[in-house]
Length: 244
Image (cartoon, rainbow, N blue to C red; front, side):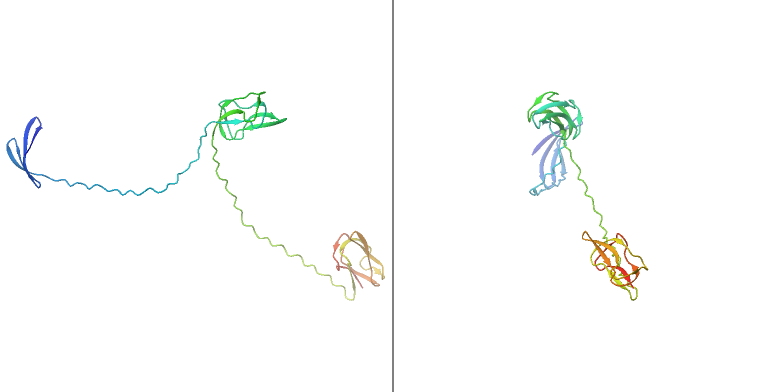
């Protein structure tokens, strides 16, 4: 038997639990017997968590925006000519920070990234050695966006224009065609259409291989046609005159 004491709203109660069978209990409250039905609560089964071993996770690397203070050093031994910035000044990549004379040449010291001048360790006229600290610089890393590559438009296929068809002039009926013996350039034409010529008469002068060549009439007759003009370039066997 189990005894319990309760105090409810200022009143005291003595409760004796005599017997419990399944969900029925025999109790006495201040000596008065009671049969009490006990409501059992179903226990929630514990959840079993099956943990799978974690796979290999590739870390995501994000670009660092802030860079700790770094020193800008003298690239060569020389002398400081001008200091163009001051402490606390904000500068951009490529800005000239100072100029120094080295080996009789003026050299510009440039900011390598965007940032702020923290300290300046030199002054104009001061001599420095290679790797001496010139400026303490705190900057932000520059993350450049990729430059889009230009897309070339498809090239239109250009077909060469067909060469004009050069028709060899047909000699006048019964006429003799005088042709160029060599490729060259017409220097001078000494005849005209309708002129009477004899065999061996000079018709024109042709320059070929830096030499002047006389083109002569091959028969007695009349000049019926002249197929070239002064200054024109001709090829071997091009028609020059028709003699009838």
